[in-house]
Length: 455
Image 1: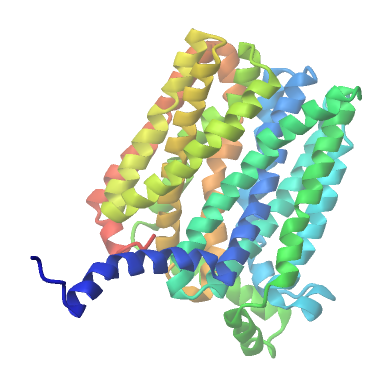
Image 2: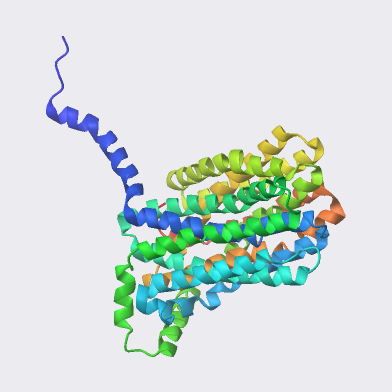
């Protein structure tokens, strides 16, 4: 008869399970849940001035060239580092006094964001594309300001033991917020249309509903507590003038970063890494509509299969980043997100087939999520100085948006000139410059100098 294990053996047998339960329990910590809900609020506005707006414009009869140019309304995402020091250093009348340094800016930016979305809801793409552009620009400006504050709040409020869970929760919730403002809006517009109201009015109410969704972030900010690090920084600089605080935040962040070896090459790599994703993503929604799929077909697949693929891809990206070195992880993410564009070339040849659309969307969401998680790990590794984390992170994410905003602005003209199958082949080729930079930085030991990256 087999003897019973002694107490030490039993403890060892239970240890992996206890460790797993402890690692899962951290996701239920109040601070992590706060960051999760703020991630949802941050993810909501991006598509409202991006892919969802492009569907609205295409249905209103706007030509592809003009639609492609609308990528330029994302300019605030590329320039937000310019006013990030203001967010770090300045007080917002009433809001800072009532809610604190970070929470005051959160509530203030979210209220302005709600107003901007409501203003965009009242525009008409068919009659006044210029007013649509101005409304979208305001949404992007308020959204990018909210991102600056949320990034700073996340870094300052979470202890080291909860940073990884907070990052994972934030990224997942951000992507879910984007899906709500893409597929969710498309479903809402269809539902409003089914009641007999005009299409333009249905789109208006869809955007009004998204403005109301931003209140989730506002309530979360009101329920949260001001980060202790932020309160300490506020106390330390209380005697300084506003101009001095802004100057210290700006100069310290930029000079510290640019003094590093190969800083300019690293910045160029940040700009180009997600360009292949952005170039194809700018035209994905118009492509699907042009191919003959209905708005509901696209919405159902993006919200169902696309969401599942995104979440699985996020976990896969975390596994890759833990399993391999940072350089190897970036190679895996870069190659996968580039080659995934070929799925849309295949879809363009196959034509209207819902299974083919589901597969193409799944491949794109899965690989994009892997690339995003690995890319966020790289950006976090570049922000070494806790005194300048908010401004440096804003600089890096702003540069990352250059590909989506400026380099992708001509995507519509490329699609018109080449046709859809060749367009997505070209979107693979545009990944080559980032791969060349990756080779160069790897040979210069850039990634080894960053040290281990915790995801």
